[in-house]
Amino acid sequence: MPETEMDYLGTGFKIINFPTWAIRNSDGVEEPQITEEASAYVQERMNFLRFERGKFISGCTEIDNVLGEAISAFFFREHRDEYKRGQFHDFIIDTTIFSFSQRKNVIQQIMKKYPREFPLLDSHIRQIMFEQIDYVIKMRNAFAHGKIIINYRERTNTLSYFNSSKNRIEELPLNSELFSTLSTITDDLSSQIIENCIFGEVV
Image 1: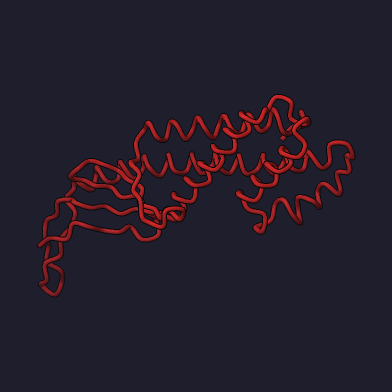
Image 2: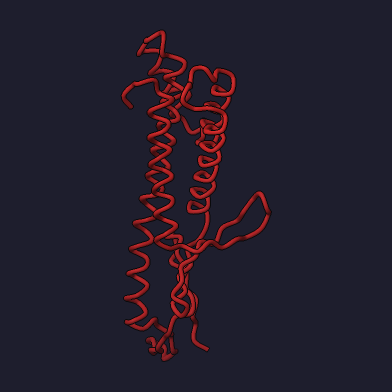
């Protein structure tokens, strides 16, 4: 039976249910190869999904950065010591020990303790904002550690990832609507954080 499943090692992609045709190698053994038509379709899908995945990851990086700037702005808004602020970024904010989730937790605690510093962000708006950030982090981790499956026969694209909160593998359909939603969320979050949490400073 021809092989109809193939991993693209190191890319995070897997294709399934594609037509094959057999060729003989130098030892006379038949080896299945993906057909030209299927290969063209798969490459088109991979290019689209790579682009959208990269665009979303860039949006996540932007949110990560502005969260760091928001924390920095809070602690240095009155005492503008740029040297100390630079050290604060070099040794804390911009290090691998201070993750996306930790930045979110810190600014969340700051807002909880000093709500008057964020007059345009009432408790309801803050709740929605942090729920969206949690969703963005979840999706970023899913793309970073999951696998994108292209089903040629069904003409579908799915993201297979491990949901740690439910302790199981889940699959999420990937389509233009989802990527449009992710783009809107990341853009809106970046703008919201810059406008309300960085106190008018330029990022």
